[in-house]
Length: 637
Image 1 (cartoon, helix red, strand yellow):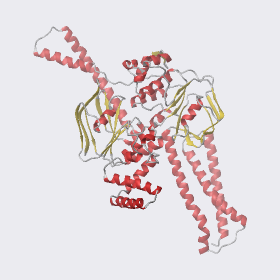
Image 2 (cartoon, helix red, strand yellow):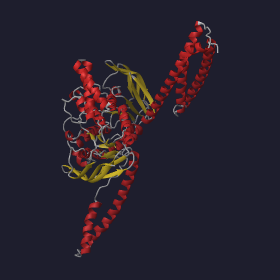
Image 3 (cartoon, one colour):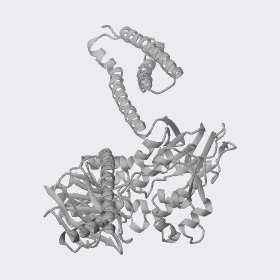
């Protein structure tokens, strides 16, 4: 069943053509991602589909009687509205009933007047009549996940991130057939992104989405459409399939264009050497030549050549962190944190928002001072620090002039030099754009320029705080390749899991309350390990809860079937202690088994784990036998 049909759609922005004569459709149940470079018209296309903009030509057809919900990239909501007004902004009866129920419930909690209680009774009756409890439950789950506690707060009191979450919550709560989302993961931490990922993957809804989060895209979407050079290409598969087929497409287009250019050269020679002919056949050939000329001079996309800069040499001592403590008022960030960096290591930092990830970076570059402990950089260290708010730029200068103030030429890994202009062009700032004044750049362009200036300073230790925000997928791939071949050290905070998987060797996991765990592996390996540990803890807790009642109830069971013997006070205390120790030893044994099966650890660690496993197994057997012995002594069997 077709929910959306786009026919020969064309849209320009001023003199710039965004896309031309594009045609595609979305079927019921399809989860589709829209990919394009920044400025290629992704948001414009979504606005046209949502009815907020009009095309230059072409047609958009939505199936009759389907509900459409749209989350734009920039949500404009009046500051005078409350959160509940935004979330329940719908005329559907079931939404109105849930809104009334939440409003009345809040009134009753504050003031139990007869009028409020009567209104609550009527609201409960309507909730039952419309079977609205499932929706109310879904509302509570979504609001809880997004950390929206006070639904009566004014929008004007919220931060940008909270406003985005409110708009997203509203979109998800709506009873929707077609869901259109523009960058839904912006301002969300990894835990929230993973919840949204799971929610959208399992939701029985049709989805059209723009996102730069490739991991999210790969997990959620099964269909990809791409706008490239004003044309549309469709790929029936996930992101990995798209990457493979795009390479094939570019290779085929390049080969085809070479054939056309060869034919063009032949025809060009004929045009300039043959006398002008007046025959119909000759005129037709001349007309065909003009069409061929247009095709032959068309630019085609090509895979970028490797672009790897040379870094300054690193000495033996890189960076040492010893017993670092730091806290804000009433909030512990780091507690006795120590680490010694090695040459060429690439470390990622993950954790919930507010756990102190950016704080660690600021401590390392000296922006703030620790409460205790010491940070000792090596003598050869040259930091390149990219903060979330970018670099300050004084005066309204042209982009190319700002870059040349840092470096006229950049030395490459192979020893050759390239100009600043070529460096900018590689990362998507075309030559004609490089003369744009800084104040005329978009927020994303300013961030990208700041990041490139960080690279131009020729650092050998990069400290990057959310470097991938606001970048399109092509730029992200270029950035990944650049950083993968970077010969110095990298410490990076990022919510981009695809980026972390490709780049880092290990992770600092900020767990809160000053605890930082060092996990060797990429993000996916960490996540799988975390799920495995949580599952094992749940299993152990279940086993413990099953065993504990057995220990606790053994007396009552025995009293019904056996005659009780007397234990000494010392033996009773020993029995109680065994009932606590055995489950704990079982947990330790399971954790050691997981370590030995993980494929990680040095040979020395494996030997140590194996010895500990044998010792614990023997101790469990010994204590279990003693528990049975005391149990048998306590009762006549």
